[in-house]
Image (cartoon, rainbow, N blue to C red; front, side, top):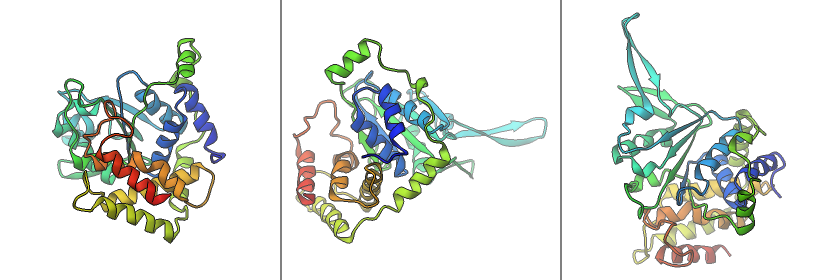
Length: 308
């Protein structure tokens, strides 16, 4: 059972993004855990729709930036503008100063522009000309990217990939969901009402942080982290930040499930979206890989066996 206060949010987004309840719930868990979300898939499967519907569900200020190859860092952060009337500079905020920023096709921009998000995602502030400017709360970056086998893309550096709590792939809708879409039964993101407000979201984020996680379960997470660090293991090791992300996401998932404590199934539910992009360094992109193939999926399966 979902938390009663969040069920209208899940239902409202589900009317817009048909047949993708698990992905909707994972995106909500990422938001409740104060994380940032990377959505990777083919164009046209609903990445932007999910981002906008999520923002509208909580009445959050929403801005979208297309990460084109000529986008500059100042186009995101803002800049100091000289006011001739007062003979002084004043700061003109950029689109980063929103509660939800959709960084559309982030891997089409240059690495320099991609890195402009790093401080904002890590610390909730940006620095311009030596001055630090805090971002609004709550603050969420939802970045979409096409696979690296698509033309005109630049891979995200591992340091920036690690700032994303989760990486999701929406995939194609099921037959019945796509039939409903073709029949016009899907709703546009504008139809999503604000079931909750930003203050409610902040309260839910605080509640998620208080979800009880037993010492025995933390030991199982530690075993998983240590397994990834064995020298002969395939892929990159999971860092302490990855462990914090996994526990935070599991706590948020347990809140969605209507419990006040975390169980192993909560960790299993978020394990792949939290860990896989950290294990593969962004190379195991979801467009071409098989769900059960490759060394990184084997590492995740080992983790699943530890938790069962």
